[in-house]
Image (tube, rainbow, N blue to C red; front, side, top):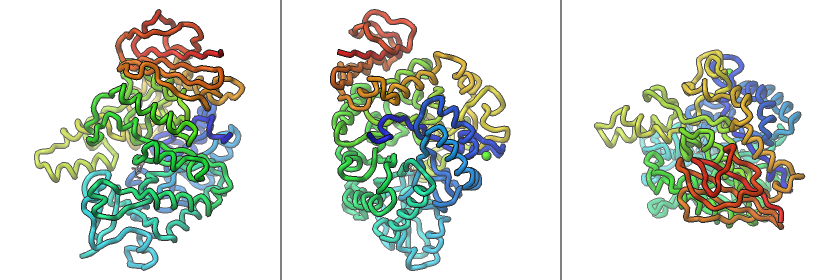
Length: 538
Ligand code: GLC
Ligand code: CA
């Protein structure tokens, strides 16, 4: 069995995890310091968002040199030490490759701007931009460099898109892969991987078709086959906003030799209803469950999934899908539903202690380029748009919610730094922090620890069901209860979870309950956000 099928991955946003030199920015030494904590939680791998040399316009997703460590995060020696400590605890390191674009400060782009033929062809320059293609962060995706030439930037102006049709670009990334494999990484997360296969065709883009599936998969295959990746069992995970179940199978069916797993976003976007994410509707649970069910069933023996409800681009999970008033109960319910599915669960830093969205008092308190670029682009179209309106507009879905520093304890700056933190600390840190969670045996932390161990401990028959079992929703139309059954050979796992803040009647058998997030259970009646796990050996 692939090692990544029974582990849980913990995502670290390095800037916000733990600062050790008091410059207000998290660093690699800080990650190393907290490896014993992550080991206690039970995770088998950490995915660290980009820590490569970068001007940090998009917090590291704008890479200036893929083989150098950003000095604000430390040195290559710090990375090697982190690796040694991880080895001691058998925790693998997953690095984050941004292959769709570089920073505009990257040497390749600088040379391209100087009209060096070779490097110009590394990027997408044109005299005839397809204006229908917009930037994901709002506004135009084309930037003029001289009188008649433009370059493509799917994200910020400082993130020029690479031209993957150029074999030299592909060769560079094979070398980058080999470099990091030699450093001993356990896997790679591929940023916006769909985007490397581009369809630069006006008619198709007008129809909303931008990704070229064939090109995309041939690039991924070549990358794997023609680098050291080919000889390693890496945990490779693609970020795939474009993916449907069919597409996820193309990426992850083992026979195709591409990626180990993908992050699909259909469940995340289920309540956006084709509007901008800022205007998302309330969660429609019946719809959400159908999406989860479709992915579980269709991928089942045909590929593998990365399971997640939050990351550095999404709101905090409890604020998004749960209820802050039932913080612990709803956090436990969301986690239980996710962790009993087939796939590899990802826990985003702070999720294991129930961190929440943050209240920002003005736009100046915000860091994220997306918020600021979006403001400029709306303002351009709309004269009476104000900063206050924008603050409201982005409050729930903005990415800074997930990026406020990790809350370690009740001390100054939540124990994140003794300096001035780069982004505001959530004011609730005195109630929500790691130190308190570790002292309370009923905390979310210990609930996550149990869930992680169920999957990890292969001597426990539950693990087999979680890894291999099939999936069936129970009462699929129910708008308040998320219930499902996993079955493998003669064993059955049943999850019954109240995803509402009401008491809800539901029929179930009280025998064989192995987990309950309340300390009692009524007959056929669930308390707000109450969840139980049942395990039956036939
Ligand atoms: C991905 C990253 C996000 C980044 C974007 C551009 O979606 O997760 O943080 O802004 O790609 O690189
Ligand atoms: Ca630091």
